[in-house]
Length: 518
Ligand SMILES: Cc1cc2nc3c(=O)[nH]c(=O)nc-3n(C[C@H](O)[C@H](O)[C@H](O)COP(=O)(O)O)c2cc1C
Ligand code: SF4
Image 1 (cartoon, rainbow, N blue to C red):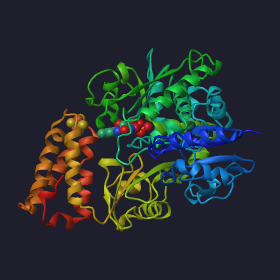
Image 2: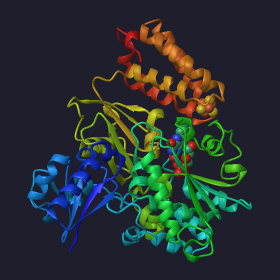
Image 3: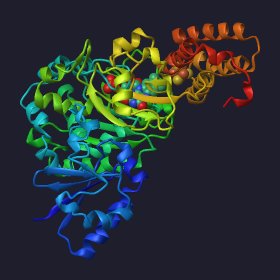
Image 4: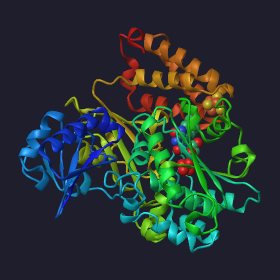
């Protein structure tokens, strides 16, 4: 019987040599005349163990990692094909504590399947959700998504079913599904991992969305820094088309739906949905005023669903297992699971999909295993560059949209960036203004001018010039940006600034100062 060896092709695994490991295995397998098939998969998201390989055995899979090309001959000598003992042997992947403690729904297939094989996708539960959706009418599909409690994973946490219903009710001859795969937040990679590891789940989710609202065309807007995800999505779209799941009659249903992947041009603001639509239409990524909502006047002025990768890729699970099964996970109004991305100065960075409700401390201790530098954790920023900096005394906050809002933070896209005790939060606050000044689309004054004034004023604070007065000015500026900015770019920049000032006041009273400013 042919043995199967799984080696990731995820960008994070490639960055640490997965291709070289695959080449070394291929050469050694040929040299030894072994009957082994190599299948390239996505990543399981345990980045400190990459490249993590798996061998298929009678009793399931056995993982080894992190593997280097020089380990290959030794692994084969140790009986890798039979799950033999070796210093890199990790055992059954599902038993690795980091994975065992998770609830993988959206990421259930990631790292497990051949990303572009429709047959493998089906063999692991793929297209069950679409089959069910095809037997339902549009209202029933929307109701199912509403009932699941699914909220947008792109940042704002808006209920997905309600958005779909607005598009469903809009009367027009053309509607669109647009997937936001711009993933610009610091420390985030879940969208990328999913597109590289299980792209067909996104294709299926978009197809179900199309049935629900009556759309015939979909676009995936992928950031240009993600060439592997772009290639994987294109291969998956082709595979789904060849299998009859995309095209003039989806799975023979008579519903037409096609998808095109488009590359963005590397601007953070192009992740904001209206700016993304401008960019898709071939213009500069300038934010549009709302109303009208994209749901009513979106791409090319037509009713459009704009959803994040994970929002859409979670829909097949909901349709296959039922809304209630999804809603049974989570806490309060945050239902289901959240794919958390743990990054920054942390020993065990990676993807952690878990029901809402786990505390920040549990994420850091149970999964992270401390900082990579071995020094104490001093601060974590949750929710990307517009998210708050949390001190230790807030680490018991549960991962829940409302609980985070109550402490003036946000969950955003689920990214957590960890800092040790060498971090200077005054410089991080300055960086928040600087980031906004660089990435602002320039359409509204509070953000375009405010962010630059913020950098200048923060420089005065760092230099010790009339600190109290300038901090008061920053507070005033933050209030103005919060209330008067046209979009959340300018509107949320005060969040990291004010959280740094509130939770880490000592950092704003130090000398020496400006010379170290970024
Ligand atoms: C400055 C800015 C950047 C954003 N970047 C992203 C992004 O990279 N990906 C994303 O899905 N949503 C991003 N959003 C949120 C989108 O505007 C929008 O809310 C989201 O795509 C809706 O999808 P969802 O309901 O599935 O979350 C961003 C918003 C702002 C203000
Ligand atoms: S807040 Fe900033 S990014 Fe948003 S519209 Fe105004 S200038 Fe553009």
